[in-house]
Length: 414
Image (tube, rainbow, N blue to C red; front, side):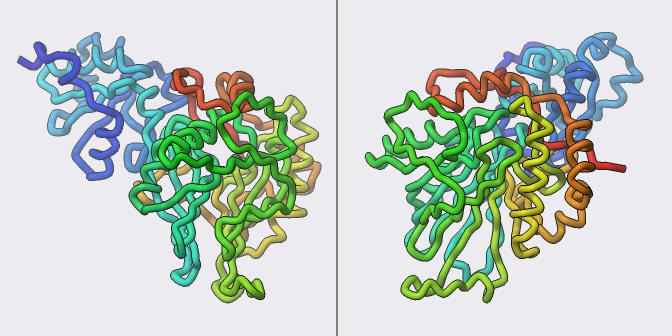
């Protein structure tokens, strides 16, 4: 009988759930948490951006009208915070004749699931770009590699999915030689140290790790090759490809964006960017495709909001309008992540779409400081961890990093 199934047979691994969604299988996701938990952070991916919510206490009322809202012709997948309530719900619904499995580890387990999308670049461009997205957390990191010799640089890896970067590198025969953090992250633990340690173990050589010279670090890690960068420094991928650091303060004091520069002749440095009419900017948490970075994680919101405004108007919007913006986060409440489809936009488009960018400085500062969302959970602890640049091999991250991306100003003016 269904009611006699073991717990393991009634559970589904988070990655397996993602595969079912990617394969467009006929599933129905049922969230059994409280409305408050659901509103603050929910499973949002592809067509399942608003899963059905029925709190578990209501399920146990055995209300026939409520049960009619759960289809019997689909596979039901229940989810909660850590997998306990959802497993209870799965057992109950299986006894009632439904085909149900519970997400193992709940939202904490789903928090480790990632998706990969290759960013389209001109065929003649000498590089490739992969965007690696941590679905539930909204974190995004990148691999930029040379087509000539497969040398690669990683930007903004997240600690919980550092293996994803290694997997993409292995599948495409890339050699990761450099790792960059655009800024000191506050909502998730950086993956630079963990990724650098794994690369050293695999290749017996240390990848160079780059951090902003304007952030406060207190490194306790002798295993990684530390390099501190400043405005206009060049991080070379090959002789033909480099990333130019642009100091873009506001989200943090030391935030750096990186503009890709490439050439077709290394002797005379003849740029082919104008010819191809393609450029891109890795913006970290400074600028997103639907909003701007939040300025209050240093307790000086007004000051940093002013810096953000100056960053946008003195640096970013002066770049070519067709420059592709590749941020370090996306907002799952406003963007439905699609499997294999990169999240990006151009500077020209964002200038029209994000009304905050057309405000005066006073309007911008007042609006941004008046509409800030709740700060990331445990953000002070996470900042302290990231200052030390350690891999934290034995540390459990799910509860520390619980919650959605909240590094953006989430509201737009009416």
